[in-house]
Image (cartoon, rainbow, N blue to C red; front, side, top):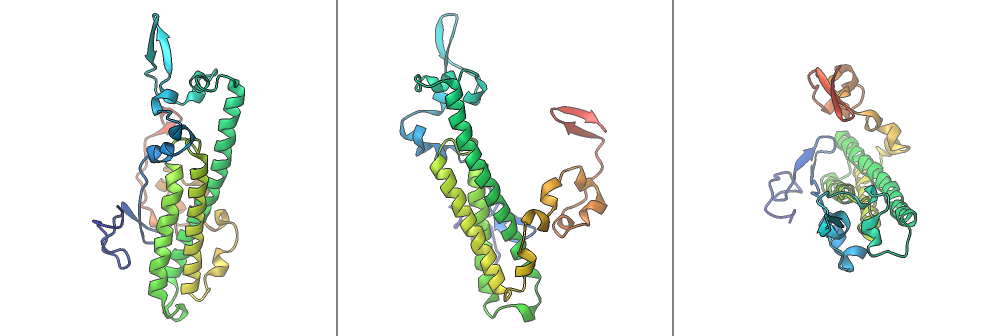
Amino acid sequence: MYEDNGNVDMPGFKGKFADWVHPVSQTPMLKMQHPDYETWIDGPHGAAGVACADCHMPYQREEGKKMSSHWWTSPLRDPELRACRQCHADKTADYLRGRVLYTQEKTFRQLLKAQEESVRAHEAVRLANAVPAEQRAANYDSLMAEAREMVRKGQLYWDYVSAENSVGFHNPAKALDTLMSSMEFSHKAEALAEQATGYSISPALAGDIKQIVPPILNMSRKLQQDADFLKQHPWTQLLPVLPKAEQVWDGQELSAR
């Protein structure tokens, strides 16, 4: 679907679809839009015939009548986990909650690892874009086109899990497999960018990516209003300075500052 009928005119991506071009790596990117159904359908609950409403709109009784709840929410918000225990009646709420959190914690840790590798892939391509001609390999253009394609796929596969709303619970095996694919694509992007530059960028990529690209730890809309802050790193230099805001969100409250 994303390879045809597109809007991109960039070499290596002509005719492909993109939601935007990433300013750091100059890569046409894709935004995964709520892949909940695709994840759930072949997961344990989907394969067992459990529908979305069974868990997120469980039955309740009002004035003696049995009806589906119209409060669409996570089953975990119910201390008794009654939606889960309609099927898992032999398990306690604490046990079931523990199993959900176990799966989500495992997935979230891998999500963060895949996220860091995706950032490193973008940085690798950014560095490779800037190397002088004398440091470039003979097949630099073809290597870089492939590197950008791997960046695109690495972030898309990460986003597949990030945008899906269960933190892996709807389909634990698929979530972890997808994140492994994300990391493989991102690693491949890094390797191709290094090869394209005769490995001259390799020292700059070594180490903790959170130190190499520090703005990912503390970037905010408020900081984007600070022109001096945006000068501190090549990534933030790509962002426009936002006008000073008289009001900002503080948690769920709109307050003046």
